[in-house]
Image (cartoon, rainbow, N blue to C red):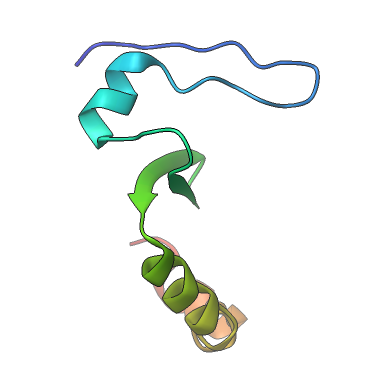
Length: 77
């Protein structure tokens, strides 16, 4: 696996390197999502319908899956 880097600007922006844009099929104006888990970030190309669906599900899932009891029971998986 190649290590590809990008520099963060003073505004917190980074360019997605060409090799990654090509791999994901990203073009100007495309939307991407960022998923954070255990200190890692996954970037995905998304369509508008994916974004609407994710936003609609977000609050319900957060209440259902982010409870302290669930973290205690499943946090080490």
